[in-house]
Image (cartoon, rainbow, N blue to C red; front, side, top):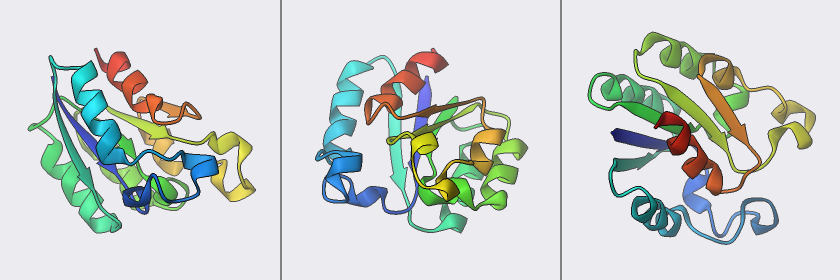
Amino acid sequence: MKILILNGPNLNLLGRREPEIYGSVSFETYLEQLKSQFPQHQIVYYQSNHEGCLIDKLQEADGDYDAVVMNPGGYAHTSIALADCIRAISIPVIEVHISDITKREPYRKHSFTAEACMKCISGLGLEGYAKAIEMLM
């Protein structure tokens, strides 16, 4: 499988940002572990802090990738545009959140984008990405 991992705003700060919530490992470090864990798959990574760039990448992925594992970050709770884009493409998208959004601030409990995804994994830390890939297999 060719899988796009798509991370949204502030996830470029993993390893430094609120380590008590998000851990102390950068995504780039974890990505190498993930690629080693799933050598049979082509895993491509993209991160942006900009909503439009994430939408563009999802649209480009349609037909070019077999699936998307996406952590939309804070856009999960605000972006109807991202949710609409997920609904518009033909490849499966699994949403991942490092923290358990159901146990966070009230405004984080609802994810518009998760409603459009085939599944949402929340609260497993970085291992949620591996779980998503396993589900896609």
